[in-house]
Length: 148
Image (tube, rainbow, N blue to C red; front, side, top):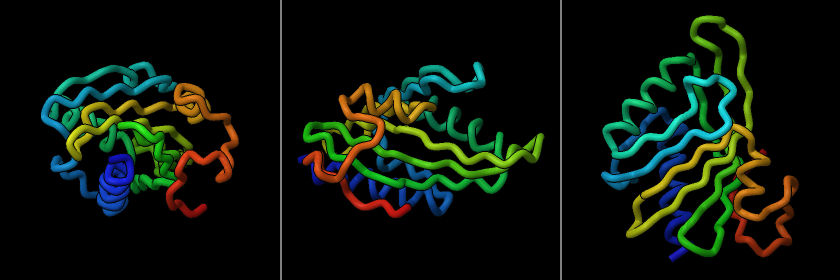
């Protein structure tokens, strides 16, 4: 099942890279947490597809030219997939450039995301799942794709 989960997450990020955020990948009762955000109003926890959708729209509206890229997709050999992602954009109000590496941890059931934990600090996400900050493809953890 884990390879199927990786494919679901990969397809979701392909949509996100095009600016498309379809709900078809997400369970209606999804739990989403944003952990460690440096802006207090960006941290929090949301439950349900409607709350996630509102939260995502609010996040997207803070930026212009936002690009979300999956750099590495790591199969954790259970119902979880870790994505080492990069967000690049400009702050809508400040115009300041943003280039940030995040860690996104997804839990899937029946081909849908039931939990989505977005870590502002990529190292914290990796520590949470038991990986070092500088993973190697030799770990046997099922790295999938991702170009730098």
